[in-house]
Length: 395
Image 1 (tube, one colour):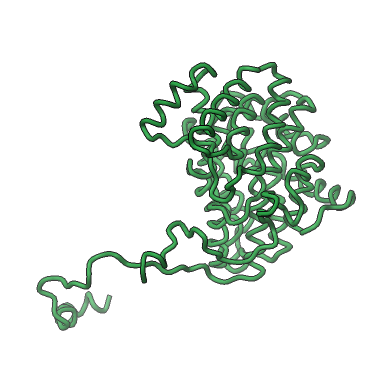
Image 2 (tube, rainbow, N blue to C red):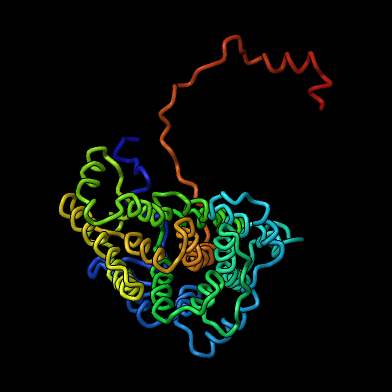
């Protein structure tokens, strides 16, 4: 095997087929089940997009109403989940809270089942997917309120998904402008083909493990700053720069020290992330709503300077980080928000993987020492040892 045969990071490797999403190279557009994501973000509530990714078609009014009715029973924070989160230190990363919470939900849901029973049918896993989809806002909201020393807020059945998420986090009826921007962000983050966390979920699923285990693995993958943690990193950069007037000296120093500038570049998009214009438009509405032109100035200046110097364009994390900050989410909550959105894509892929499963087990090229042997070992060494200690051998 030559170096040319090895695809480090699986670059360019087509591992399977999927009907869930693709990037259309002709239009540089991300498609969910064939629909351009910007059209979905402009016209659909997030739970309708969830239905689309799980079932393949947008729901009728009746189908969406039925899904909402089923999901509302899971909106409140389960006592067992709250108790598990409360055992964690307050300075634990929120992604660790989510990972723990999903493990608890999975253990409760599959208690008494053997491993194959826990794998579940397609219908059972759609129901489990809806459970996690509906429960995650309560987990994310409780995590932020807990770190702020605030009591949890109970959900309200009459609110939409986005309205209820914001209500449980902040305890106020959100303005429609904020709801719309948040809804769009959730749709834009919902799915993106065989990214690192989704592929992790599919690998785990391919072993016939259960949906909850696959989601826990995906959360672990998304925690990394080269994947989901990038939107947190963008806000850290904004905080570090402070003001648009500091962009040039800050960037001079960052590039001189070969720092990785998070929020720019994408392995799939070469002409810019197709989701950015939609999220940037949502950010603009928030900048106007909260009267924060300083955020827009910093955003615009850093983007202009970095693109002109490196020719690398922003990805979705670049506008979403400051948008979530303006809404009022703590920076540590940004990646859990990503989880609350991507749970839809992950579970759609888990169900698809189960429907046409093959164990995912790639090969590797060995570059360690040639075969060598332990000094003093002979083929008879083990037989002699066992014959001298029969009781140990029997045990």
